[in-house]
Image 1 (tube, rainbow, N blue to C red):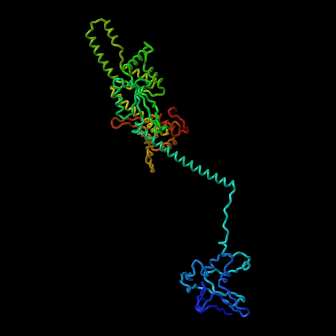
Image 2 (cartoon, one colour):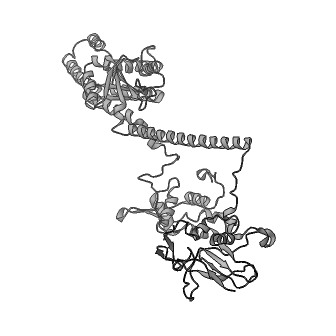
Image 3 (cartoon, helix red, strand yellow):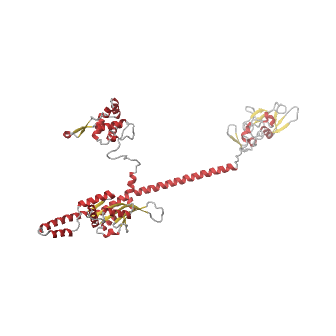
Length: 523
């Protein structure tokens, strides 16, 4: 059986078909193939129908249209078998001729385009089991549907989202508050530093200070140090107090001030001498009810409770110089008038008034300091009082900064000039000095005594081994008693022994298991 192509000569083959490789070119190709059989009439099968039969059911027809020249490549250009393209209708793709069973199953030939899929039965019965073709499973698989949540689940999700948002806002607000707190703390610390703290201090002076002889000099000294001064009436006359301005006030419309606990009171010389004389009379039991330094301090503390009081007196030394000059003058007058009667001399002594000696002043000051813990400072001139007021104001301004520096959190000094730590390197250098410092921590142990002990036993382990070799408790306690301690150099050098008392204390410290043992009370 032979296959012939109908159509005029010179017509190009259908799109997507090419002659069998190695076969001579056909004189012409038509749009249909005629199948000849001896038992039947000629049957004409269009090419498009053949292509549709080869496609699996359900596959998009774009492949078939592409095979017919109606796909994306268009009818003008089609990709060649080698990956290139040819222009015009004359360019054909390489074709593969496969046997195709017709009505009688033999003698027909099939020309298939290389880009077409393998032939598959058009009916579902042609595939065993009726399963769909494997090539279309990926494309025809249904899209998974979104899960539908219940009302409770949606409410729970909304609640969780709202809770997360609330937590984020809380964290953000906490971070902002922490940032603002650190900024405020840095500003407060800066305001407490020396050089900045004076800007927040105001000195309040009583008007009575400006009425005394050198009160203007005190005010001028404070103003020269750039202190803000205010003249206001105080509860105690001739007193000076201080106010501190808040670094960050709670209300922005006005400043906030805090009273400092210190108060400085100026005593006039006449008042001070009268108080000392009253103490002298009270001590002798001659008179009672006179004002003394203690009674004056009690009145001030009653008017200003909780204040730290300091007293000042000006020109006390001038009074003692005048007193000595008067004593010399009276001695000269007594020499001139030695022949006068005793009555006249007693009258002169009574008219001279009470005399206060330096010893009387010292006794009154000691009694005041022991009973009230209040000190009195003397100044030779008003200029010195002005300098003292300036230094006192500086100390009041720097007091918070110094208190903060002293708050280390430990009950002992971490480092000091006379007793600082010893650095020990990884090689062990410095351990000998640590051992010597440990011995030196004992009460009444000098540097020479510690050096003598560590020279005999350079490490605690050697001393412990020496204790273990002793046969009795008494021998252990007196092990270090005979060690010589040399003090000084040259001809002035002296020597002594450690002694049994220190030897026993070192032994108890090295061997006792009682952490509360008081070494000085043993023995």
